[in-house]
Image 1: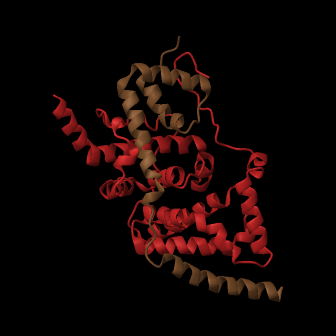
Image 2: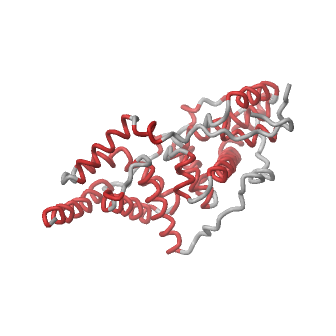
Image 3: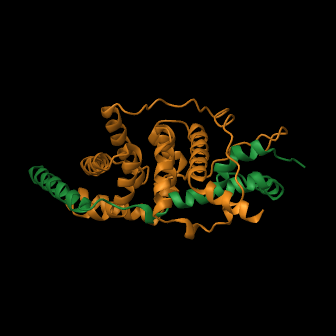
Length: 87
Length: 228
């Protein structure tokens, strides 16, 4: 049976989290993780940080962002309509 | 498939075919909206960008690290996308296209400021992460994610993202914040998929290391000592 080294698992950790890996490789990695506490903790902590990074609750727009954007877009829409009419 | 040496072969699964993208209901809705806009109903553009505004701004602020510049970058990207909508070919999601435009605007802003090196790192697929050794820590995985997101934690996350060199920050923001596929992120950044994967792994390891060493390590250490 093929046994993976820690560096093999770490090289594929990102692909593992993205599910961008073959079922065979996934199984081999999971077998390694059952035996290797260091790799298991590294994987879990990376996963947790990525969950936090993607958390929408972190994203706040500056006050007035939407209003300023809509003003700019309104002018843009006007130009667009004028161009449309002259075609 | 594994070679006898134990080397792993990359198997890509996130490159959807054109027909798969076409049958995605969200993609169909995007296309419908774009058709209506181009047919003379520009107000429909609000609907197209509404779900993306916060992420576009966050993409910009993550790269330029300055709120005023980030607003300019985000709004300019949204305006440019509108002006170029007729050229949008629909071979990617509209969001991916808009994130690429935002990334380019942000890069231009950085070049203008001449503050940050945009040099490409040497991360060819063969050796990119070989010399990177992640920090070992005890048992952070036991902390439930929902309880750790607070203002202090969010500030540490911002710092962790900001300290990444620009090429790593770009791939991380596109992939893990914007949710763009690795293939589309590679295309947006003009690098190969293999390089994008290596760069993403490195970025994630660096982010995780900075975050745990500046934010979680003291807690972990305290918890560890408490059990001794």
